Image (cartoon, rainbow, N blue to C red; front, side, top):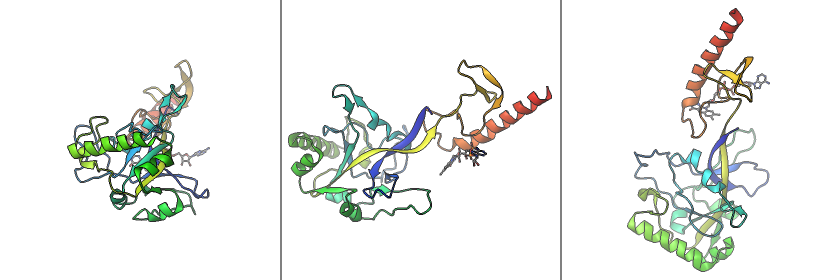
Length: 254
Ligand SMILES: Cc1cc2nc3c(=O)[nH]c(=O)nc-3n(C[C@H](O)[C@H](O)[C@H](O)COP(=O)(O)OP(=O)(O)OC[C@H]3O[C@@H](n4cnc5c(N)ncnc54)[C@H](O)[C@@H]3O)c2cc1C
């Protein structure tokens, strides 16, 4: 496996629910075109030192969102944003469900409430009455968190995020208590990997030489890796399968 795709999200407090829960799936967008103008994201993400560290609404977030949480900080010999902290104010919390659970396992399902209140009651989300209380809860000095929030609110007023390039239309200030917060983690939605093959779908050994008679087709060993394929899987299945089949048939003949 050489890569996984995923965004960021929550852990359920009920141990019987074994999956991560992605944040609400906002429309993906691509550089150059920008996101839809009416999409708002009420939260920002902070690292463990209380600083923003990424564009919370990066292009193709369902693939790229998890990546920024993975930075290892050699200065403190620990991961800088594992977990990261999602924070929002009371206005933002009313906007929509923060989480969008998905699972495919029979008998395991979770419905997130429309106003996030059930999750606040169950502890998936938490509530703090002031910035000072929030800082204490996430283990960050109060003045640092206050400065981060102040900078963010100024960026919202100016409609410009010079630090991380958050799309202006998505920006919402964090002003009105109580504040909502939660630990967020990388969420895996798809993996990319498998044996390496050449353009004739022949599986290669560790020295890059074809293993006689062994072909691959489909998503296994996909040509896609560094970015989400966005609909290209099925096409690759058709193309790679046809090539592998032809190669195998020709080999049999001769
Ligand atoms: C929720 C979801 C949405 C998706 N949406 C899209 C999309 O919009 N566009 C797109 O292009 N792609 C999409 N994909 C990806 C696409 O469906 C897959 O890439 C594609 O189906 C992979 O085909 P495959 O033949 O390589 O593998 P699979 O379809 O997984 O086939 C592998 C088969 O091997 C069988 N098998 C496993 N082990 C054994 C064994 N030991 N012996 C015998 N048989 C075995 C399995 O039962 C399975 O039938 C989506 C996938 C998911 C899960």
